[in-house]
Length: 296
Image 1 (cartoon, rainbow, N blue to C red):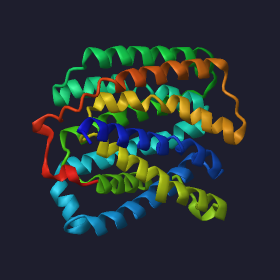
Image 2: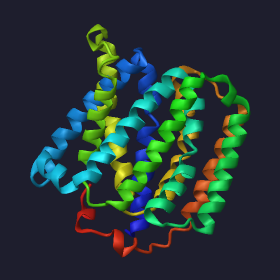
Image 3: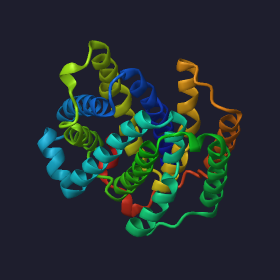
Image 4: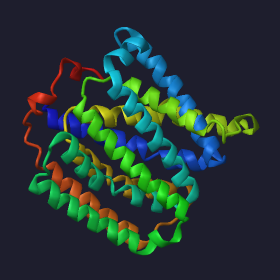
C-alpha cells in the first residue's frame, strides 16, 4: 500500500471515530469543565498504558526521544480538546463542527510558515469547493449559537491545524505519548473548575467510553496520517466532520439538520472525493521520512 493510501486510511478512520465526540459530550449530561476533565483523565490513562507497553523505554523513553516538540504538541492538543468540549457544550453541534472546519485555512498558514509547503492546485480547488459547502450550511445554522461556544470552536480549529503541522514536521515523536500528554493537559486545564465528585455513574461511564476508546484511538489515527500526507490534506478531509457529526446527533437525538446541512454536506463530500483522486502513490518527501514511521 502506498504512503498516500495509508494516509487516506488513517485520516478517514480517525475522522469517523472523532465524529463521535459530540455524541459522547452530549450524552455526558455534565458541565463543560466536568466533561473536559473526565475526557482528559481517561485519555491520559489509556494512552499512558499503551505507551508504556509499546514504546521502547516506555513513557520516559517516549518523552525524552520526542523532546520539546512532543511537549508542545501535547499542550496544543490539550487546548484543542478543552475548547472542543466547551464549544459543543455552549453552541449547537452543527455550529461547532462547521466553525471548526476553517482548520484548512489555519493549516495552510502554519504549513507555509513552519514547513514551507505550498498547496497544489487540486488541493486549493478542493478546499474552495469544501468551503463553499460550509457556506451553504452556515447560511441557516451559524447565527443561532452562543458566542462563547463559537469562539471556542474557532480556537479549537486553530489548535488542531497547528498540531497537524507539528506532527508532519516531527514524524518521529510517539503518537500515543502525544495523546497521553494532551489528555493530561486537558485534565490540568479544567481541574480547578471541575467537580467530578458530584457526577453520577452514567456520566463516568459515558466519558470512559470516549476517553478510553473512541477519542484517543481516533486521534492516534489522525496523528499517524501526518506521516503520509500533508497537514492541509488532513484538514481538508477533516471537513467531512461537518456532515458526519450533525448526522449522528440527528440519528441519536432526532435533532434534524436543515436541508442546507445536507446540501452543504454533499458538496463537501464531493470535494473530498475529488481530492482523493490525486493520490498517485508517490512517496512522502524524504526529509519527512524516519525509521519511526513504521510505528503507530
